[in-house]
Image (cartoon, rainbow, N blue to C red; front, side, top):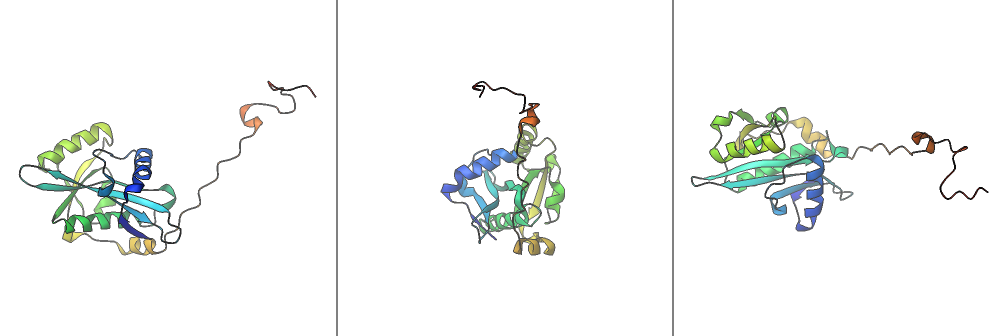
Length: 193
C-alpha cells in the first residue's frame, strides 16, 4: 500500500467517489489529490486533497475531500492520505494547514487542534460557512502546524497489512420477495403451456 499523486486519468474515478461519499468537489482539480493504492492489486483505496486559497495577505492551505472506500476503512488508509497531504503542504512551504470538518476526533489524533470560527482567516471563515450550509452542518475549523504532525503507531502498522474487507454480496431476489407465488402467478407473455 502506498500513497501517490493522482493522475489525470483518475478524474472520473475521483469525482464518482467524491459524489458517492458526499464530499466537497468545489474547484475540483485532479492534480490537487493524492490516491492510496494497493501495490499488489492496483486497487484504489482512498484519496484526499490540498486546496490552496490565495488572499491579499498570504496563501492558506486546506486539507479537504478526504475519503476512504468502505472496504478499506479502519486500516490506516485515511491516516496515510492525511500524512501525504501534510507532506505536500510542507513541500509547498506551508507551516500550518487547516481543515473544515466534523471529523474532529479523527484529525485530533494527528495533532490537529480546534480553531474558533472567529479566529480563522477570513477566507476560511467564508469556506466554513459554505461548507456548513451545503455539506457538513457540524463542520468546525481545525489547524495543524505541519512539524507537529504525529502518525499513531497503530495506524502505521494497520496500513502495512491493509487488505480490502469482503463486501457482503447482495442477496439474490426471488419472486417471493415481491409477494409473488411462482406456482400460481401468470405472466404477461405466459402461453399457458
